[in-house]
Image (cartoon, rainbow, N blue to C red):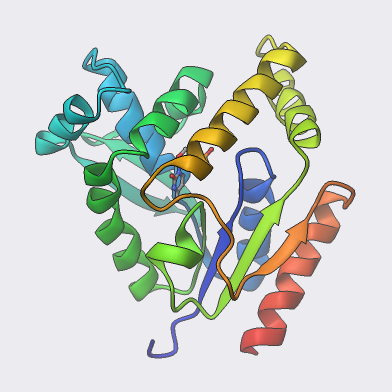
Length: 224
Ligand code: DC
């Protein structure tokens, strides 16, 4: 892989992947790629077109003229839909469910596969998602599977949404996490599961900063 270092971080919704991955990537000097943002963008495009996101054929049809790009500004990822920055719009609960639905469509996964591979081939990166270590970057030098109990993940998600000023109900958030876990790990294509050669990290009782340090140490042990 010509000296390029790829770190795959996979795990279920709300395990804190994006926050710790962003910080770890920054400290390692790698770019951080949030692949969930890509699925969310395809989901938002489908919602905007009034497509039922559970209708696989209809979702696949939206790909014929879609334009999705990832750009990096000061190391921060932005996702563009037809050139428009949709980084905020993709974070709504509706976009989360749409993303989970569209991620079960094989054509969507195939469409996003090359985009993810191209970025990883060009730059040292830490890429987070569900199938990075198993499917997208099976040769990544480092693979980490981050998890936490559903209740802890629901707690963290509530805090995050509250901090953004959004109304939250813990039971609804927990139900949504359980539903997404089920969808993500039971779909036929690229289901969420740890790669055989991944390091498992259960973050339920570990403070965020320590998770970041552990990730950095795992990377350093494997590649430096
Ligand atoms: O990580 P996230 O919550 O932003 O991801 C949104 C949805 O996209 C999630 O329900 C599963 C899907 N996803 C996926 O199937 N594969 C990835 N590599 C990343 C996300």
